[in-house]
Length: 265
Image 1 (cartoon, rainbow, N blue to C red):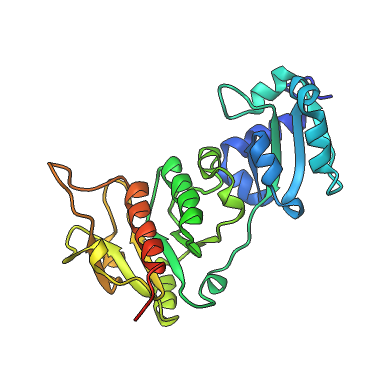
Image 2: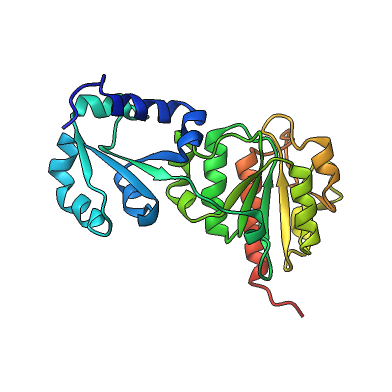
């Protein structure tokens, strides 16, 4: 059992929690909680750390999940676990997981593709909510600009509620080039934009489509907005000008899902 916060492995875990560079260098990220532990793909699981008190309560569950692979849980004292945890009320189990390896080209394959393109999103909670909602709405993939918030940020990971394991995503070093690839694949591109002529529910999304969602404060960058083939807007009442990025994305994603249930005549 690890009982000291000065332990080298503990210091490494804290570093992985705090620093994107450390996560990217190792190609891993951290997840916490029994649900995230249960759902992690077996081939992506690298290490498991469990607090002493949590292990006593959940020993059977932990060992049942780990029986599928060759990873064994490392026990740590409750004090040490609190030190490495990202939450005020630690959930007692933490995993080191290999980062995902999705490619844009894979997202473009198949019929009736439904993609999201995120430009310079900065809020971890927003990104996590979008990932989770995207899975629920049947989105096929999420493409992000290189300057978007880190999807492996602990707050983002918590917000995905496990969807990070299943929703394909990638970062594009050059988002404009990625958008051109999307368009060449026959996917119609829409920008959620205040200058949209039509309300979002007046368009036909029953063929492949991609929505552009911009930065929380500034919206889409001009060059990204110009790359869209169609602008759409979400009508507002009162003095509200726009919605939170995650909510706007949700409205658009579920409109596509609603229309997908309607037969093309």
